[in-house]
Length: 423
Image (cartoon, rainbow, N blue to C red; front, top):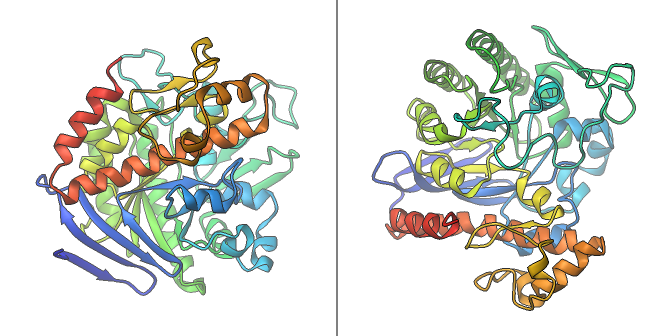
């Protein structure tokens, strides 16, 4: 195999092994202190230092290279000092592979304007109200409370943003807290993940161009402050990624990618909100302006078609809460499209969920058994469904990687899309 790019940074190594003919998509490896991530890769979300309903051994057995935890939630519970005393995230959750933490910036979105308007990261152009496509993303672990604990007003905002940072109220007890770029990085240092993210402001797809520009400029200033604090205080051998914002606007995305890439980050995150139909173009705009020799993470994206689009246009890693959240509601991936295990036809279906799947669930249990577990509200149902969905997505990306190495990406994509979306 020919190595076409090798970057040896003090905290992380990134190798590009092969590129697609379009000059964007690539196959590579991210080497961290706790192991290697073979890219492209889907990073499993373990919001509160746990992948809900699964043990770390189960997560590892389904093929996951890394997990991503949530700075906001771990700050609130159990608290950064507990994780620090435990020896960091790896020891605390008994995960021995690479780890990520997000910055907490997305909570400004999910607890602020998105909370009030019931919107998420991805919208469809042809939907006038711009509701979420399929799933409404608020949080993987908990639905947000209907009211601010300190307010009588329904749907009151829990977050306010100023130039210096974000004030927010805990969704646990209503107590007041504040994140600044420096504080976000300090918390992430204490949590101890291998890869951390600069503090950013994620905007709603509903936001005007003017506010997208304002939030993007603020994100750039926060990125510099995050990086400065990290460089002065990083004692854990952690890599830091800067985040590109700019919403759905080409000029803003290009501007943001150029400014963020001009800072000495170890890699980059692509954040914010997208039009679903623009997943290909938006990611392409950004990656055309980011340096090729550093890894790129597409935040909050996990729908199969979006994974193909992101990979084809140069994204290396992805995370999304959808596979586990959908699993807990009985929505399961198959190569013939998604199914709802609560549908009546599965009550007496003694076949596998997916005949091609080799996950623990499909190897040992039938659709009828899963249907029974969900109908009787047994906890095991969520576990078995989560194993299946995560195995499906993690290994779909592995298959995409293999197809790229074998010069079969276009053929594999066409075959998968034709079958998965046939209905």
